[in-house]
Amino acid sequence: MKKKYFLNANIIDPQNSLDEVGGLIINEEGKIEAIGKKVNENNIPSREKYINLKGKHLFPGIVDMRVFVGEPGFEYKENFRTLSNAALSGGVTSVVTMPNTNPVIDNVSMVDFLKRRGRDKSKINIFPTASLTKNLEGTNMTEFGLLQKKGIVGFTDGIKTIQNSRLMSRIMNSSHDLNSLIIQHAEDSHLAENGMMNDGIISTKLGLQGIPEVAEKIIIERDLALLNEYRCRYHISQISSAKSVGVINEKKQFLKFSCGVSINNLSLNENDIGDFRTFLKLSPPLRTEDDRLSLVDGLNKKTIDVIVSDHKPEDEEQKRLTFAKAATGASGIETLLSLSLELFHNGSVKLNTIIEALTSNPAKILKINKGNLSIGNDADFCIVDINKPWIVKTENLVSKSKNTSIENKKLQGKVISTFVNGEELYKI
Figure 1: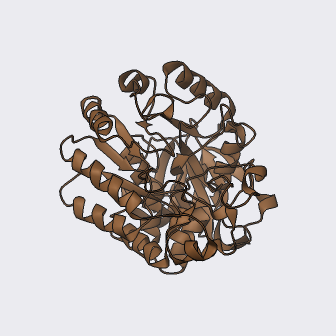
Figure 2: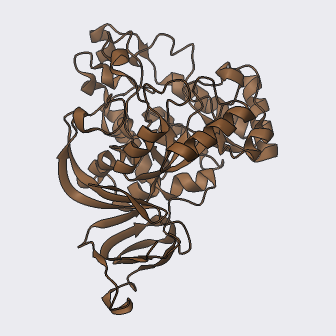
């Protein structure tokens, strides 16, 4: 690989407190050799050709902490090849995959299979999670120690929640001893049973069973009470309500933990469901506009640490059903950054805060050396025209499944190219 030179970029790297116009040099090994305002035409060899980015933004590669890949078992929805292509088109260079596959990622042999398949078919960095419980049944813990030694970065039951408090206390105790990361999808299954959307006026009008916000809050409060006893690494996968923001803000005063939010809940509300739009049947559900604004405020105040895509591809047959029977989830990895930039363009959130929640924060929680532009690190980054307008069209999506929640939405900000290990793997 030849050295690469990029000049005149607006560089934002929250981990290294970089927010300046400058350049980037990638060495022959695909590592970052130099970065910042000191990299300019006067400081590079005159014989070398360089790429003039003309003020476009240069961000660290995005780390998406919640991604469902269909492999193994659901390859007709998504596989590692289609996932990595979709991710690259959205500036995502590292993903945390959920264990909800068939078979479930709950043993060492499945982890070995997953790592081999990811290495052979994926162009991006794959960081797999394993399930908290065997076969996601919520009864018997998986072997945290063995799975962690195989490279598992965290443990979660994905779209399921640990309902049994005694089991959750054992999980947290083990997590404390092994320094494992627990990722919880917070939802009380009894309160949310048969629920399809936010419990409120709109669900009543549509005649749909609602999911009350207390279903989320009650699990968060229980887990944080246990966390006070067992100080482990604990992350709430995604929150959706103002009440949850309030609880988390209060508890963060004396407890160390982290939480995320789906870009869907930051950008949309229950009104967007309209006349039974099944592509907006999500978990957690879209809630009120007041809830959405509270989530935005929580992101600004650093109560919320991470923005995720909650990329859950579903084939069209599973979404083109009645709202009650339609599958839950939306494809979102390739629109994650652009939709996040909407919060910047409308003045809701500072650009630095958005990039931090997409890059360095998830990397720190996971304890992986990604999401930054430190000298000597792999050159994983994306080049973005933050003002470029475009419209989300289903037929143009790269993901194998096209169940986007924002079809025909006008966005401002587009990834121009994405690099992994110094190699350009996507270009518009």
